[in-house]
Image (cartoon, rainbow, N blue to C red; front, side, top):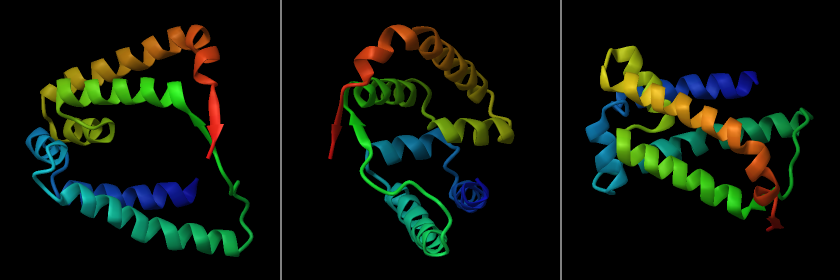
Length: 137
């Protein structure tokens, strides 16, 4: 957990410097008009890969191997994610950054995120049997 926290601080600091909490920046990223997103992902891989490999080499226990590919769960999650991005102009993590900066529109996005999480929690037992269709890649 500490590894994720440390890497999260590093990536969060870079995201704050690059102004990812600004909805206009996120819209440019979503339209692929800006290469900033690719840089952020590359930074995450550049930091995370050697750290995780080093921990694995040191004998820290991780579950390495193929993970199940939940087709319906990924489709539902992608639909929720894309709808949230289109309506609010924020990625889930950038909502909290914008809220910390004092952006008023982020308050509505936070309420929407909480409402979405509550809706998923209420529907989970109903939808769960359908999301467990998995394919091992």
